[in-house]
Image (tube, rainbow, N blue to C red; front, side):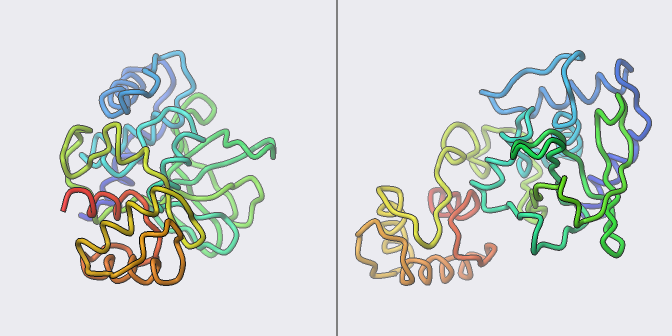
Length: 244
């Protein structure tokens, strides 16, 4: 069974779980085991849509590929840092993606769920805290209430839920590093250029400018180490560079 199928299967097993039940407590407890050390510790009385998503990954030993926060905007920020974020427009969502909603149109995410199917532009999403239970939602991919999608890297999960694992390096450092891409500037670009020169003989000028040559060096490095080749330095590329 693939990682995606494991997550979807686990989420389906909680369909109908009402708030306040023993299975709801299992969700909250699982989130609290997986949450980042600086994240809010959930109680049974808190809104729990994010906790549900995080808990499903924790239960499947894949908490290392999901942001361990209890609020949507925090999860989105980490997905962006990892280079695993897709805006709604121009992206075709896939089974296993994490979808974020903005009900009020104010630019801040209010709710989240796990995509279990995309059939001709109609999403089936499994959500916690939907009418105080775990349930399905049907929504079109063209809905303006969708902000975008987190795309967990199922192939990269170490199967280790510990946030202290060396592979994950999630603890307190890697996830604080900025997302770097064409046009980025500053000291972190200089650090990137030094590392690319050292590990990949990129022969870059250490000028702090993420231009075409730096992007080319990043894509070559990503190809070499079988990372997602997008020319963007997010969590995966930072991790490979810093634990090599």
